[in-house]
Each structure stands twice: as structure tokens, then as C-alpha cells.
Image (cartoon, rainbow, N blue to C red; front, side):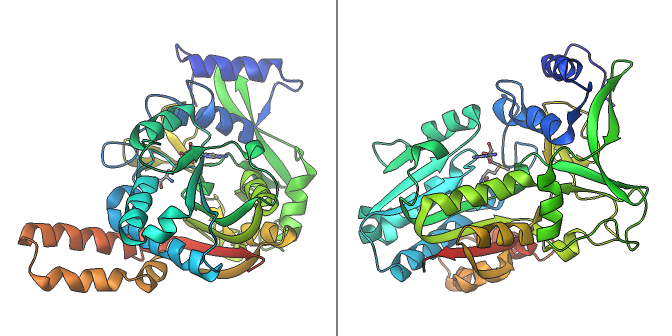
Length: 373
Ligand SMILES: C[S@@+](CC[C@H](N)C(=O)[O-])C[C@H]1O[C@@H](n2cnc3c(N)ncnc32)[C@H](O)[C@@H]1O
């Protein structure tokens, strides 16, 4: 547990705890501050860097193939919608803007007609990353705009909402089974140290979430002290998409499972993980504001939330199959056409394999939902 030392963020968290009515904040509030507090939260600080130099990498930072294949999927969506002339792609949580750049460059080069009819919108929570995106994506060259949810009119989007590793980066509530009932994990201070405390659920939405997902953690199958996470922010994002989308698709790529696997009785310590300089560990109270904290995604909750707002599940498949279906296999075969040096072939082959490795990125889930399609 971390001590309130010279860290400005720890001081802020500590004063937030002491000014709250029960001298405690939910884990979700704590995680939100660690990740997104202006200037000091991990994603808003100078510490944030994605890729080989950062604390973690994503498919987008491995090679351009991921973004190009996703661009092909976007082209399919445009075709399926009858090639509308006001097609919008909304990327949520765009990191450093790498994926957006690859998609836009590819569409411009390969599908100029779609490119003429396309506007690319980014919804980004981190000011620090937004600045990096603006630098990466010159809006004179690209038809791109940055938006807040409230700037987008209801039922105005005809197109696609896409996200890669957004949902795993949202603050989650944590719950624990105690004496056959469900309690919530709160964060408090004891003797100057961040400490966990258990108390009643902070919101009825957690109960509703478990009912909708058909999961009962108080059942005897679940051991005492079983703890796990509840991602209500992911549900809110799907609800927002449901409001803004008039017609089109939602493509969510992330690591996670369906509810039955996620809340399996054997997964008794949840999925929360922290990343610091490419190493992972389980202590969210260490390296406050300078480490990433993530949890796996419960895809069933996205499906259920979607159904309530008119988004129907079209497909849920592993990233490996999703990319193979879009031509990743052809890209592997084409490596032997003799145009690259052996070194280049080796590098590209490793990158493509990494994107489909079932033990790694290839095992990520891709959920595709549709509204009025
Ligand atoms: C793990 S990074 C993934 C970045 C990028 N998509 C990639 O694949 O490299 C998560 C991103 O989601 C952003 N984010 C988190 N919560 C968000 C929210 N509610 N709305 C929009 N962006 C959000 C973060 O600031 C960050 O840009």
C-alpha cells in the first residue's frame, strides 16, 4: 500500500477520501483518479506512452496491418449500408492517434470514393493524448474532428463506432463476497496508507448488472472472499452509442470473455492488472498515477447493454479469425513474393503472427453490433 509522500496525486486522493462522508471512496473513483485526473492521472500525464517505449503495446502499435485490415472492415460496413454519402467513423479512445492515421491513409489510398464521403470523429478523454493525436493527424490533410459525446446529436451517426482497448481502460467497481452477500471494495486511508475496506454496494446498478448478466455471486459455487470487477462505464458507453447511432455498426476490440467465463467461480481474484514499464503486477496502490490499471472486458455486458438500446449482436469472434477473414492470411502468403529482404520478411511475419497469436492479441474478442442494419 502506498504512503502519502511527495506525490501530488496521492495528496489529492487522500484529501478526497478525508472529505468524503464515510472517509472512503469506491475503488472505481480511486481508479478514475489514478488514470484520468487532470495532469496527474496516468493517461493525462507525461508518463503515458503506448508501444515499445511505453508500459504496454496494442495491436495498433505493432504494425500497420491491424489498422489496414480494420479499414477494410470499415469499407465493408460502408458497402453494407448502401455507400451513404455522409458516412462517419467514430473512434473512441484513440490513444496516440496511430490507428486513426493508418485507417485514414489506407482509405485514402485504396478506397478514394469512400474517403470522399467519410468524416472521422475521435472521442478522447485524455487531454494529453488528444494533443498527441492532433499533432499526428493534421486536419488539413485528413477529414477529422474531435468531439465530446454531448456535441454529437442523437440519432445523427450513419456509420461505425470503433474502439480498440478502450473498454479495458475504464475505471471499474470491485465487489467481494462476504458472509454470502455481495459487498463493494472501497479505498480509505489508515495511518497514512491507502487501504481497502468493504461496505455495502454504492449503487443499485451493480445488482442490475449481475441480474442482466445472469450471474449470482452469492450462490454457493462462489467461495467466500471471491472478488471481481464490474465495469459500469463500459455499459454507459454502449448506451451512449445506442443514442447517437442512427444506422450502422459498433466494432469493439478488447481482451476479455463472456460473462460465464469472466465470473467463473475459479477466477476468484478477478482480472484487474497493473502495467508498469512492460511488467505486470496486481497492486493498484503502487506507482499511483504512473502505472496503467486495466481489467478484462465482460463482453456479455456490452451485448446486454446494446440490446436495451437497439444494438443487436451480429458477431463475436476472436481477433485472429476477424483478421484472417479480412485477408491477414493473404498478407502472410504474399511475403514470399520476393519483393522484401529476408530481414523485412522475418519482421513482418513476426508482426502478423503476433496479431493472430491465440495466447496473445489473436485471442482478443471482437464484438460487432448493429443498429437498423
Ligand atoms: C489503452 S488506450 C488504447 C489506445 C488505442 N485505442 C490503441 O489501440 O492503441 C485507451 C484509450 O482510451 C481513452 N479513454 C479512456 N476512457 C475514455 C472515454 N470514456 N472516452 C474516450 N476515450 C477514453 C484513453 O485516454 C486512451 O486513449
